[in-house]
Amino acid sequence: RKDSASKDNVTIEDVTLPKSIIMRLAKGVLPPNTQIQANAILAMSKSATVFINHLANAANEHTQNSNKKTIMPADVFAALDDIEFPFFRERLEAEFKKFNETQTTKRNTYRRKVAA
Amino acid sequence: MPYNTTAIPPRKEVTGQTQLPLSRVKKIVAQDQDINICSNNAAFVITLATEMFIQYLAGESFTMAKLGKPRRNIQYKDLAAAVSHHDNLEFLEDVIPK
Image 1 (spheres, each protein chain N blue to C red):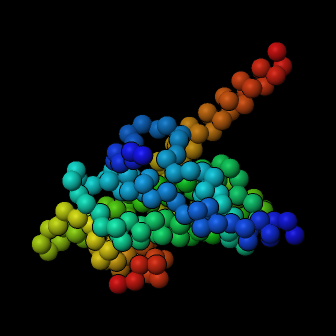
Image 2: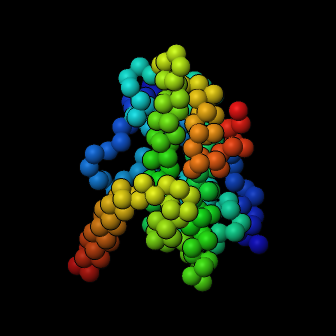
């Protein structure tokens, strides 16, 4: 099957997050001149990937419980409680609202262009 | 090539944008055999949650580095200490063993 083949063809670069952005995000919450050891950055990077799977898995439980196949934002928000990160929810909902508005505006501009 | 190493502090205003690449996060989610499809919107929420998670983990590790004789560099053992101190980081026990 095509999609199982594409899963095998995934390279390590595809599933690793960019280290520089991880480092910059981490430094964003630390006082200036705080250093992060190389293996601490590596551990953070690995943790971030595991976190993605951890959250996606918890979200997928909600998706399956409602007999759906596609994970929706509501499933992710609900999953935050399950994985004990409820304090992320408020900001994530606000960011998602903004993201959604931007996407809708883009779509409408495109449609108007096509219609014109 | 000069690298951009500027710190990215948590944003004050809502921008609806991510720092981490959304496509990469979608690929990581797609690795999971149990998951059928992840909507683009859900992937956006997961990406931003991951950014917040990195900052949470960094902050908690720094708290550990300040205990005892305070240090200004974060070491692997600070991450391991943070993992064993917080229930919500328990899922990392295998990734960051003491």
